[in-house]
Length: 140
Image 1 (cartoon, rainbow, N blue to C red):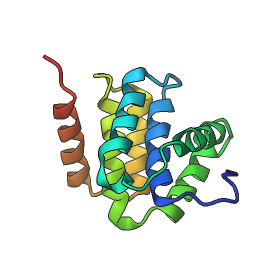
Image 2: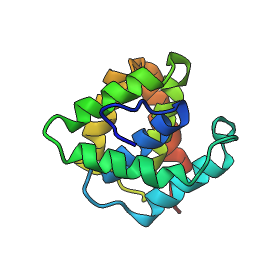
Image 3: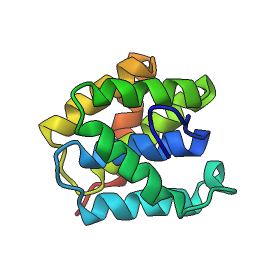
Image 4: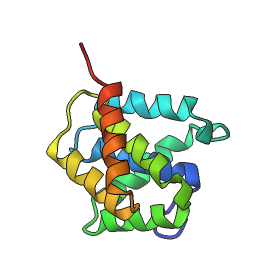
């Protein structure tokens, strides 16, 4: 898949957002990768998704993130591929991946802020999604 010429599928765009969050601190943690796998295996939006595509999408995202304007290019692909009705869904998934390891790093927080902006997530809806993610991933 050539990221510059091939648009992502809707499901690919969701996976790309999750991969970007996991890679944002340059350390893709096991908990984050397992969360991505769990989301893809269990949520209805991925019912007909070929999970083998995760590797291809991940490599595309990682390649883009190494480029100077790679994040802008990634958001361009996501905006083209992801219908507005799935913007909040993408943000929920991004927050779940960020919270999966029990820590939110500055780079993850900055990327979540950028995702909120790029996907036009309402501030109050974003805060509710973030709080729910923290609650789901809280430990004793």
